[in-house]
Image 1 (cartoon, rainbow, N blue to C red):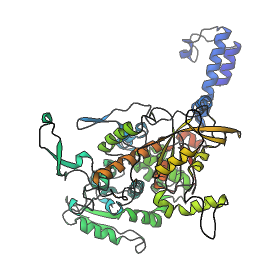
Image 2: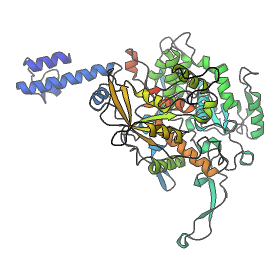
Image 3: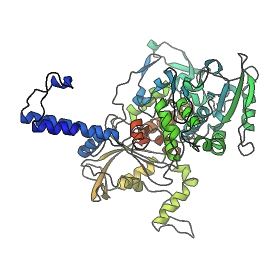
Image 4: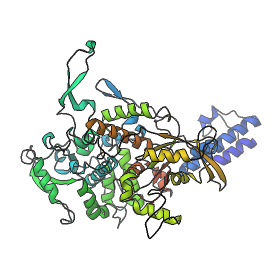
Length: 583
């Protein structure tokens, strides 16, 4: 109809009367139009028609136009939608530094909506609410004990937390975190993530006017410890519940129950019943990080993707508890492909704001970026990112992939096990940009790695142009031709060590905190890049992908489009699919 109207306008066979069926147009269009004016309107209407058609399909016409002219989409670190800073003491926290997702991508309002009934085809009516009665909010609890997993890396601990939140929401339980009392904490600073200034009790020995500075005199016993020093556990996930049964169960008692939940011996996780301080009986499922992974694999995973009779009512209810709107819950309950299900859950998890950093983490991550990154990587321009994970991974999970890589080049000696290098070269990561449009200028590319000195040497050995940019000759462009692709690389701060629990300084709480801030900053930069190159053998690669997913518009999905959209990601090597979020 729109195209026909455009043709009519262009040929002059359109006469608008003062009181026609579209009076709003009569104010804008005269009865008789000059041919040039009619042509302008025709072009405008045709463009609107194309955009309207694109909206019904899985196609981003505006991004395609931008890609045609610039060679890339306009994706930057900072949110293009202004966000209101949040107060923290005397400071104001910029929300751009509090999550891996852009602030505008987090929709916490979903958990404040009023209850409403929805109907899912083939199911009974489903009530969309918080999923529990207010009075019985703490009757079913998933008690998560992060301490046992605290020697793992940043990405591993965050993935474990996401996996625990999936089990808690799937089983419709309040997720409560239980950290050890300070006296039993294995870390002097009471957290594996080190100590920000707030973690200390301080005393002024001399006034500020006399040049005095606060002197550390002990630990702030009331400051969050363990995992909660890094992340802000959301109230909607905990339902505001305290640690259950505090009069009868202390940390050691819960730890004993956690040890008894062994997936190899007890295939179904045990539940403990006890009385809360308010007199109500509560049913508690308690797990640590390793238990979460084992029980997810052995008990929960198949239940979560069970779609024997789609649409699935339990799946739709689970989606609602993760913040889905009713129409999104209907779609999720109807999905049958395993990868679509996991990707949709990932997108829900990301949007819900489950993973948000504490305000002091956001404050210090912003300061870190301003000092170490912004000079070479402006946060308001498009950029790409590469994650290169080596070090201890080369001796375990990644070794078989390294051998496979050199075998493919015919440079692996089967008898001696020797190969040119014990890692996959950085140049191979750059080859993942093949088949991308060849641009006039260099690609601004951030590199996050636990082996910066070696990667910098590899970058140094690459050919350079007259401006000092690295050049990849004979790179394949998106049309199958050859081009000389140029890169301008940016590295973060070089640290003595990057893993949270290795190196000589691992016992120093200030050093631990520096590593935590550097790691959080790198994760946020990777997650928000235009194109991300990494691999799923690393916890970082899997975590970053979760926050690069977004649910497609429901109307597009119903018209056959894929359920979830992903910011562009290239897998350098290894498995092509990451599996469930948090895995």
